[in-house]
Amino acid sequence: MKMAELSTASGVSAATIKYYQRERLLPAADKTAPNQADYTERHLERLRLIRALTEVGGLSVARAGAVIASIDSGEPVLYTFATAQHAISEHLDAADIDADALQHVDAAMPGWRVSPDNPGRLAAARVYETFVAVGQADEAGWLAGYAASALQAAEADLNEIDSRVGRDAQAETVVVGSVLGDRLFSGLRRAAQEHVASGRYPAPAYPDDYEEPTP
Image (cartoon, rainbow, N blue to C red; front, side, top):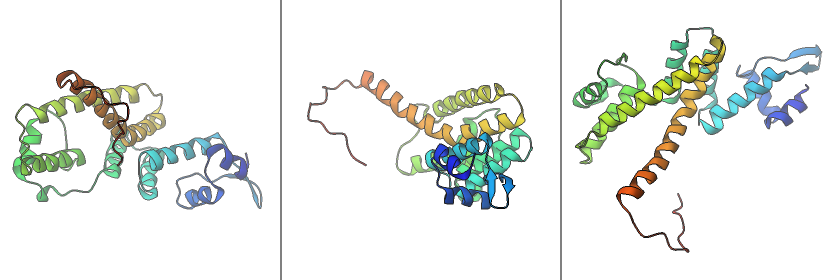
């Protein structure tokens, strides 16, 4: 297909497609003439992936480029996990996080094979530290409950990855799952909160003229 057809099929402007090519997020097209090139389904699929990572996943073009490069690198899937996790995570220094918070997080992950600089470990410790600072002590197993849910979600992630055939397909699922999985889990958590809360804290139905709060 030509550039105009690729743009129409993907919903991405020709100028943006050329930008992605310059930034090496998109493979070069096959030249058929000095000023003509043919694009394939591979290009269309890659554009859909880029849109998913940037528009839904919220990654910058630079970070999307890093995880896409990891997909194309041929490196072990475990390394792709690390690249994806660091791409979607804020950079944190363990030295800046309270040691007690780190100990509590580690205690909630007994036997887990997690590196000291894992961005999830550091982020969880900083959040725990903040909970304590605002007077929200973990009195009913809050941290342990989250850890158990996270482990179950990770098993679901890996089961999905294992169902893919070939390293490249698995690596792409790692990236998509890491980036979009956070959004998916957050959305399901909000739905689950309403479900559980409606059973524990019954309240009158909303009036007909009730309006949802706006952000």
